[in-house]
Length: 319
Image 1 (cartoon, helix red, strand yellow):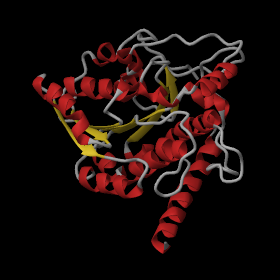
Image 2 (image 1 turned 60 degrees about the horizontal axis):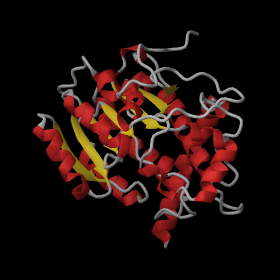
Image 3 (image 1 turned 30 degrees about the vertical axis):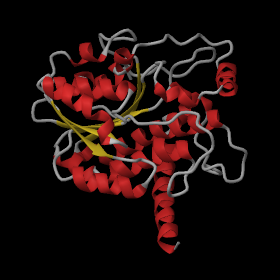
Image 4 (image 1 turned 60 degrees about the vertical axis):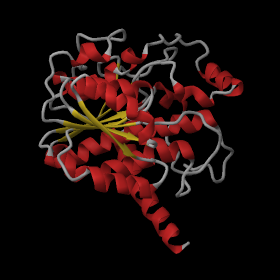
């Protein structure tokens, strides 16, 4: 099968990718729209006519962004969402799931943080990057179906190279915590989620994609201690160094995943530099590892996620 590509590439920016698209009448939700590529993604979608919901922990913190978008003639508003707490996710979905939703951009994330637990007890990187977005997407499925053509875009990372999802001890309850491996597992989960979401719901008009935005200097790296940076550097030893991107360039593949006509009728793909990613190869710090797009692992992860959420809720009710 021919790999899907485009006229854009690693140096393209989100505004260039969105040029010519009319999103009037479309509605989009962007998680983590308070910094980095989430801000740029929201800004560009709104500039082309979409009503954009900024899903952030602190709505007050994005008041200036809302004003900027509205001053430019766009429509946007902030809505509180803490992906580390089921109650916040459920409240958000109850507020924002009452109208058709054309684009859900699962952008928020945390990288290589110290060991922590979400409100319901999940390891923080798994809980925020995957579980919170998994629950959010499931709760918004009726709104996505009502759009009669929707895309769900999950921001993964080349960091998925650092670890396949571990079904034996996903929350580091029995093994020693490693911040880099934990990030890798969570990013692999993001990619697998897109594979299975697309398989389950493509017949209902929902297509799903995951992507690597690129190496971008943003606040995502705020937990990168010298030890963690050294470990990441060791994983890249002997590989081609990544090309650093600006934030507008980093948002390009997200916007391409959301809007590209080349992706019509497609889904479950892992994207990079505004094209379908190549298979990962030795000595290259790019491409997709087979474990991140394996359909059997994707089905298994979906079932595990549903059971893990149900178990966590039950424990919380009994406490």
